Image (cartoon, rainbow, N blue to C red):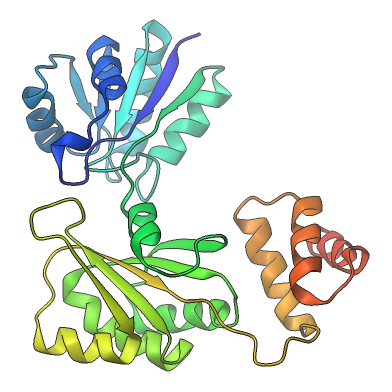
Length: 275
């Protein structure tokens, strides 16, 4: 069977393109790109002449069979507009379909805005929760933030410039005035990583109109009383852990270390939820 390569591409600086990525994109029979116009410029820069096809959120259903058909004939590469494919784009569905058809999936690692922002944020990196773009609607955004407000993990979100101030207002209301790092234009000439509290960030960007796509890295909730978690908090943590793919045994072990509950108690709750 053929291989579907998930090829990470630069998020700004073209020097971040790896030699392996260039080689793979040159060798595959087809490149499925989120935006063929952007990818065509990238390929021209590296003198790559592999055929392109579009594969994005609005045509993923109609294009899926065509990409799978190409995979049946040879190796295919998937690229996003920038960064690592299958993160905040429809790549997941293609990966799942390719696996179901018996193909090999091979990641070609490289740039990723959320990971780059996290590593430079100055906030804890040992345990974090990445949740993509904040919901556009205020009620949905508030509901999500309420769910994660008590999590001890560093939180990572993406946000568009025209919604940044509104998002910061809701973040402060739901999470309190925590430490935050706000990154934009990563790896580009005007790269900026702003650090401070959420309130300070809101004041700063009210005076300095936001430009570019933003990655928000926010400190997790610090426990004011390091005792046993409430059952409600444990249940929320279990649901999020399962949602993001943790195995029941690993989840029970981790939460037992963090919550003051025994591993047996947590595993019993996991079993009830799964039923």
